Image 1 (cartoon, rainbow, N blue to C red):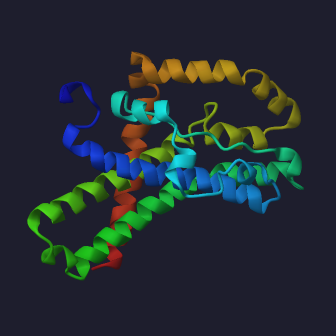
Image 2 (tube, rainbow, N blue to C red):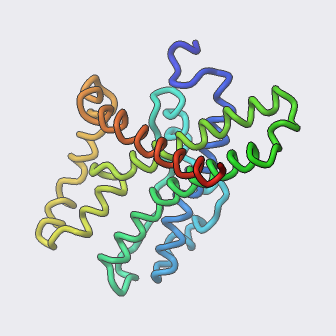
Image 3 (cartoon, rainbow, N blue to C red):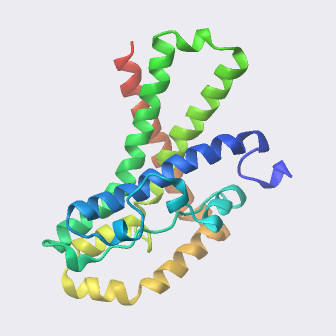
Length: 222
């Protein structure tokens, strides 16, 4: 059974914990920034919280383990509440991926701090190994979510950012063709075309971000 899963069975508890944090913080960040710019929609729907119960989507979570990609419940945003819809829309969209990048950075800080101050040496070997595995998964998963959500496909945040940057006429056409773009994205992700389109992006971008974050924080804790 393990052969058919993106993660081994022994990794699933760590992946689930990392997902609960990563998805919840990502969606909370969208809701919080929207609320700060005057849109109470997410707050009224109970999304202005860090509780995973408010944000996790059952199918989206299961697909992480079965197919290697998934999603949380999208946060509802009403642009009519914004005084400056384009600027607010961009910042709301950016908030999600940026929160995952910050979580990855926080993961490096906590892990390096535990090593630097000798905490890891005081833990039983099995417990220290568990911490190591969790932080590896937590950091890499958040970097993947950071990059994944910036891809320019609907309904991802990268597409929303391009929409808000585009002229009004172009934006209207992008909205009109959005459902077709979402279908194209699913085809790319779930077929062998992924190996020629999205996967090469991750093969370059994920190691690049991880290596630079690790190098930066390793230097701080020398």
